[in-house]
Amino acid sequence: MNKSVRMLVRNKRVFSFLVGLICCLLSPQGFAHLPDLGDPADAVITPDEEYKLGQQLLVDVRNQLPMIDDAELNYYLNNLGSQLTNVSENTNFPFTFAIVDDSTLNAFAMPGGVIVLHRAIIETSETEGELASVLAHEIAHVTQRHMARMYENSKGLSLKTALGVLAAILIGTQNSEAGQAALYGTMASGQSERLAFTRENEREADRVGREILNSAKYDVNAMTRFFTRLKEASNNNPDEILEFLRTHPLTDQRIADSMLARNEQENEIEERDEIEFKFARARLKALHERPDLRRNYLDRYDIDAQPEEIYLAALRHYLAGKYSQATNLLNDLRDPYTSLLSVQLLQARLLAASKNNSAALKKLQEMDQLYPDNPAILEELSRVWINNGDAPKAYKLLGKYTSLKEVDINLLKLKAEAARIIGKHGNSHEALAEYYYYSGDVVRALEQVKIALQQKNISNIMRTRLEQNVSDLEPVVKRIMKKQKRQQERNQLAPELQAAFK
Image (cartoon, rainbow, N blue to C red; front, top):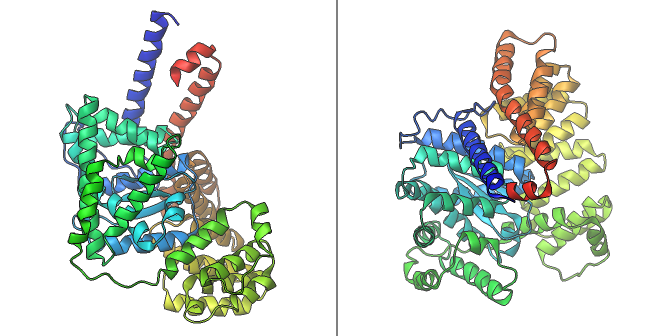
């Protein structure tokens, strides 16, 4: 490629990046409005602005990465995360914990208290303390304002501008590790300066993370065990460098720091039977193994199996449609395991799958009294009501929950179904629009909003709300369409030009 062509391509790439950055900073974003970041020279961002930006970034991540939207698993993870944030300092907003369906080891924190784990982190953790140590480390990155401090140490970048850079990176990549690397590359002028700063951040996140573990009465050495095991795995397989160690450089100094952690255990370690963690990990395994592999396990059962192994076997039979066998397996469990939420939910699902809706309904209502506003219970309860011909009850319940709580996209889809059944077509399409929006599909969200506006008998308040959504979403969709068109044009370029754009 000659010099003039390289210059043209380079200038187009820089221009495209700047346009993308400006769009990120200025664009309204439908249901969850992106905060007005104002003058990029203003280095102050309020907690409310940061939280809103984090929620918007989460929508963008949902659009780029395969998320696990299982209400039961997300409830467990967010409950564990809440135990840690409740004892953390500088938590100026509620945190959100999400799982990416990815078998590579990685985790990352975003502004506004959004912590994202790849499922491999849960699968690799041997104890709940190890999983908690990863969460505590990522929480510390947020509470210690590492991104803000990074920008303060960089030349000419304010916090607000830099958060826009982060938005552009996360929107533009499907690889969280590449996004983090690009973020760090933007912040520092030299390689040695960049590495030294991120390493210092990692050491501080370790230290504060151990303080969080100590305050929550977890063993602070769990962090050492987890990170050391990853380091050993990386040393044994140098050709397969773990993503987590790329984005969280594990230096000898960090290992040495962690070895001293035993002296930081001030609070008595709380004894935990780990059973909720083990059952959650079993559910994750069953939901994400290949169906052909799952079938191979159906006839294998050890009478001396551990409770979580019995639950895993029952879950595999349920997923394979063998409901009576799954029920028989659960009957092998004894107290206290029969009272676990995961076991109770599986029993309710088995009753519903066996067309015993009345028994399933009774069980779920009893569970709702014990665990009010649990999204996994509400999802099953609403589904049974709909299947039992009681869609109005489901709609009333879902309408109340989705207006008061953080968005659970599975509940939004059920709300749309219940509204359709009872003839509230405008509300049905509005709920579907929210479902698609929070799933990261802005184009389909706009389509549903427009369909909702065409429905008869919608209130003036609803019409005004929908019209505002159209105003917010249309500019975003236009930019998406332009981006897709540019990509199509790029695909038609000569191979040497295509390579330059990568």
